[in-house]
Image (cartoon, rainbow, N blue to C red; front, side):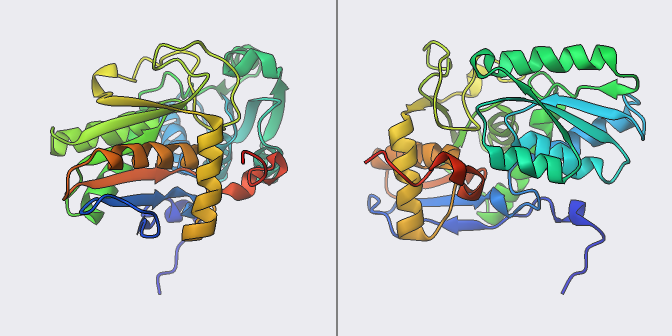
Length: 307
C-alpha cells in the first residue's frame, strides 16, 4: 500500500467507470471519469493546485500572502486545499445562491467566504475579488476565468489520464463548461493525440455558448455569462444545451441505476453523452467527466422534484 505525504499527492488519477445499466445502441460504450474521488471532492482540485503553484513560481504572491478568487465553490475548495501546503490564506467571493455545503467546506479548510448578490452572478463575484486585491497587501487573484494555467491544469493531468486509461480508444469527449478550463485543456490534449476525436461542450439553459442569453439556472458549476479568452470555439465540435429538468432527472437515474452519487453538472454531461450515443456508430467509445458529487447539493434538494 502506498503512503502519501499529504493530501496534495492524492489529486488526480481518479477512477473511470463504464456505464452499464443504461440502454445504449449496440456497440457503443460510455465511460465516466469520477472526479469526486479527488481529496477536495471535485475536478477543481487539479485547478487549485495549478493556480497556486503557478502564482508562487512567478512570484505573484509569496508565502504568507492571500489568494482571492471568485468561485461557485469547487475552485475555492481546491485553492484552500492547495494553500494549506504553502502558508497562504484564501478569500473566496461567492454568489449567495450557491450551495451552502461548498461554502462550509471552504470555511473548514480555512478560507474566508465573502458573499456577493445572486442577481449579479459571477460577474459580481469577479468585481468583488478585484476590489479586495486592491485593498489587501501581498494578495493576488489567479482569475481562473482568464488564466492560461486553468486549461493547462487539465492538459497536463486529465487529458493524459483519459488517454492512458482507455489506451487512446476515445471517439467522443463530452464535458461541461463553467470556466471552460476542464473542457479546453482536456479537449486540446485529446485533439493533439487524435484530431478526429469529437469534442462536445455542455452548458445549461441560461448560458451563452449556443447563442442564448445569460440567465438563471439550477444546474450548478457550469454555465457561462461570457466566453473566457482561453476557450476556443474551434474546439466546439458540438454544443449541447441541457435543461435543469434533464440534468436533475439524470442525477436521480445515475444514483438509482449505477449507484453513482453525482452533482447536477454531471447529470447534464451524462444527458449530453446519451444524446451523442443515440447517433453514434457501433464501435464508438464516449468518455465524459463527472465533476463532483451530490453530497454538496443535498441542501438544494438535488434528488427531489423534476418528475
